[in-house]
Image (cartoon, rainbow, N blue to C red; front, side):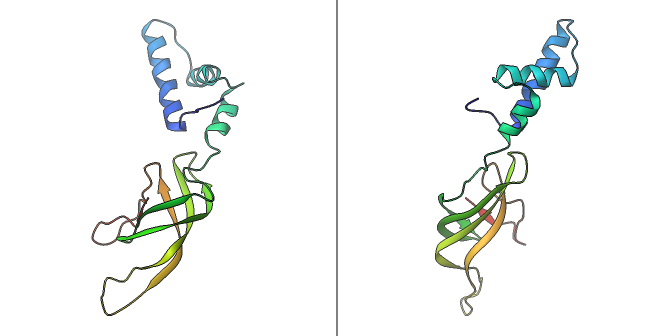
Length: 138
């Protein structure tokens, strides 16, 4: 099993398959459609495919990444990464190459050397600051 789509994509495939078969008079259950999708991707069954699709975090341990944290540019190394949303969300801890000043005031310095954030598939956090800026965008 290589190049496994996300769980959301797999479930969408199963839904489409079920609808297509139903339209031709071949009614199958949701569970049966999931099993058929698993077979199409070379898995023994849906549980095996589900486990394989949810194993790799979006960003992995040791990756060098860059982006913005609280509006400030950063680059750093991922020192912890785990899948917490079946392939849809990851929790990462990033150690910044250079500390990031997260203060909005010129007269104050508040530096972060590392942070933990939960990101979605597009590499952004759901959480936002009061002005609508994502906490982190990779």
